[in-house]
Amino acid sequence: ASVLGAFAALGLFSFIVATQVSELAQNIPVYQTNILTKIRSLKETGVGGGILARLSQVVERVGQEIDRQDATLPAAAPEKPAREPVPVEIVARERPLQVLQNIVGPLISPLGSAGLIIVVVIFMLLEREDLRDRFIRLVGYGDLHRTTEALQDAAKRVGRYLLMQLVVNIVYAVPIAIGLWALGIPNALLWGLLALALRFVPYIGPIIGMLLPLFLALAVAPGWSLVLWTAALFVVMELITGNIIEPWLYGSRTGLSPLAIIVAAIFWTWLWGPLGLILSTPLTVCLVVLGRHVPQFEFLDVLFGNEPVLEPHARLYQRLLAGDPEEATDHAEEMLEEKYLVEFYDKVAIPALLLGEQDRVRGVMGDLQRRQVAASALVLVANLDDSAQEEAGEEEAPPEAAEASDDGDPNGEDETD
Image (cartoon, rainbow, N blue to C red; front, side):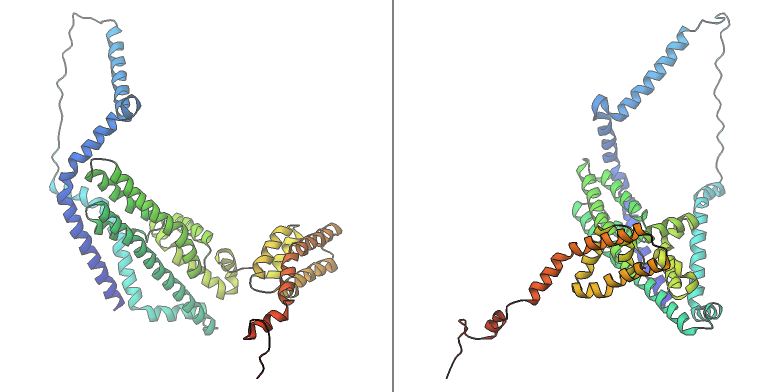
């Protein structure tokens, strides 16, 4: 059912795109005049006649210089006029099979890859139960509980990522389609659908989806304002979705850090090309889940996961040992947003100092480091003194205020019958 549903959605999408492309192809000759006007405006604008005009002048000057040098050369044997050769051009007529080969040839490789992927996906979905059992037998037959938990975790994270990506793409494509329609760009529905589909290709997909509407805006209007407004629409939407929503949303939903998503995209693209770019995040999610449930691959979770890898007291001790009380203070203030200062000292600061004592007993901490840790700890306590005073003020609130708030008489007098 899932395979049939996917192919039905793909067929509907292809039908809409084909209809829009056919309508666009019929209107292409109408845009020829505007394109020629743009080219003429490029020639006429700019200092010195524009870039194209200056290039034309350079070519003309080079040709004149060559003619001048030919004219200054001594004439050789004028009494023997040379016969001008008759230009002969042999034009081979292309056979129908050759024309078909030139058209279909470049499409064989991508179509073959797409067809192979579709066939493999279909058979994997049809035999998913058998493949799951074989994977469990190879990887974790001795610990079915942990293996089942890992498979469920990976499926949940990848499915949630794909769902969130679809939601983000729809949120991105709908304003694009509406904006292009409001600007008067023909076939706005087509460009919105392409923007939705191409955003599944990280980083380069949105660029490809933006170039086609920009070219059409160049052809539709005689001026340049429509091109600028179209570019601004895509840039604003890309800045909002790509730099704010995606790193935060994908990182929190998949368990990957934003930096891990970028590094994974680079690695898988280098390994598998465009297909690796599309599958970079799901593949990395599977590796991180493997690292969380298999001790031998724990380093993958440490490198690419978004969970803290150091305990709060260990992180605090490391900053004190490095002589960085400012970052230690920032770390403490973050924790004080959720707990009291006394609790921070009891569960974080004192265990951090105990780690230092253990290092001193083991003989791995010298006198210089010991003094540095002590000085950093004193600076930390001084920086947190304001928080201590605020908590003391809250605890020493006058009880009369509470009694007055509970008493119905604003003057605080008791009512007697």
